[in-house]
Length: 102
View 1 (cartoon, one colour):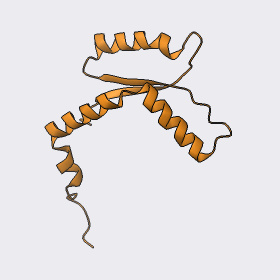
View 2: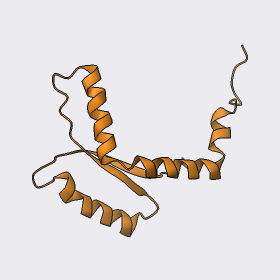
View 3: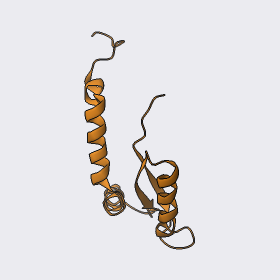
């Protein structure tokens, strides 16, 4: 569909054990450096325990997890670069050709 993939964020990693987040990071980074160097790994997120959490607690857990485990600065930088080179903003703001008049 001609959709540019800037990068990936993996989720639901355990923080301990054989498939722990930090143990998998090196292999994932290595794979993308070797085979998909056009795609940035923005982060690896751990599994979050949401049981018995209020909506506010869920929001806080997700925010804290992204802050700690995702390279948001790089993601925003890449989005700005992509947008600047693609005219994305103009495309998003443009009225669709098949839009109905009201």
